[in-house]
Length: 211
Length: 129
Image: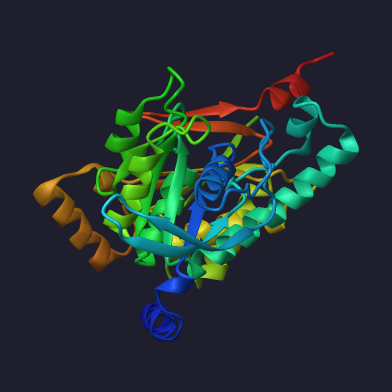
């Protein structure tokens, strides 16, 4: 365990020296359907003028890691931040193809989606170690204390990776930003609606403040 | 019938991370709900999800996982005390519940209670015709 900690420290140190801030990898992590791809699209649209991922109401729409390179954002005070944005599949502990059939997919498509989703989750966990900073995207209308959320955030903390929590879907009246803040008091929490663009400028400012 | 299997911390204490995950997952794959004394390391929790995903098939749809840890909720001195116990004794405080997804629909945590919601599919299957 001590060896792993040293290994991670030196890997990070090495990476920082030779790659510099331009290759900062900013990951979007969270449970399925929390709005990671919607936020990725919002960031890409705002700063590159194009979308990055497809979105859907059916869970596990993003089933493979997607990377958008060289995004340059500017703060209100004129600072700049370069990063590569990594949109990851939603992390879950269970996948049942019958859930996709209930959501309206054919059996064949549901089985394929389930298979791809499990592989996507494995990849997302493997990529955790490569991240320089992570935005954990949570659905503010859902219970924030789910074990998946706690496991993701606990892992990032154990790896000393900076975390910002984006409490998404605050445009919905069921959203409870205070619940998310109460669940993770040690992390900066920004309430946003990636879909409607609500509070997104504050989210960008928080990137400058905490990364 | 739902079977609960209690695993004391000493049974996993000296195992490697791979060994711990294998032991817990093997029990869950036998359609038993695991009650583990203590908790896995944080990295092991993520690894457990990863290995679970690698093993999903028609019969095994994954797990429901919940960790109840008193040291997470304490403040000030009690938190410090719990952290000292963890360093000295290992992560044997609290309890970890791992339920196979075909039996456990969800686990709801509350400061005073844990609710295990079983799958309707299982209940339906067991109804007499």
